[in-house]
Image (cartoon, rainbow, N blue to C red; front, side, top):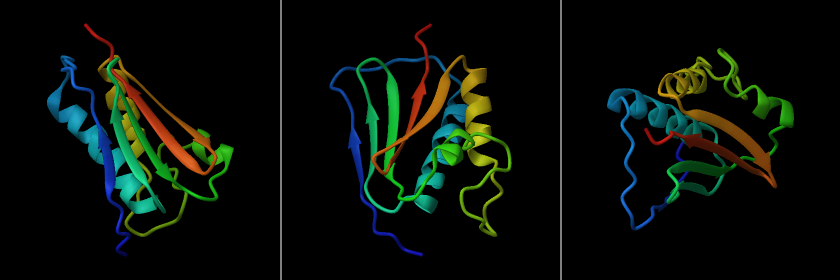
Length: 121
């Protein structure tokens, strides 16, 4: 299914430096982005703040608070789909935490927001 979503990417002018496992970070972002591509039903934004927070935001109608709270649970999917195993965001959480980071999700006003933070070392 083609959704015609054009991402809005926002980055600060200053360089943000973190010393992380390149392959793990790539997997975290791939899992978040593939999840958004599969389930987003509107706008999609990726924002890197000057403090180093990465914010992923997309319109996702009809999510419940309980579903959002369970997004990082292994094998949980919002929608049943043959190509979805429900492990992408749980892997993202494990990898983020192994790099001393934090990942969480909030749902407000029809938008799902996933925030990833990797501390400075």
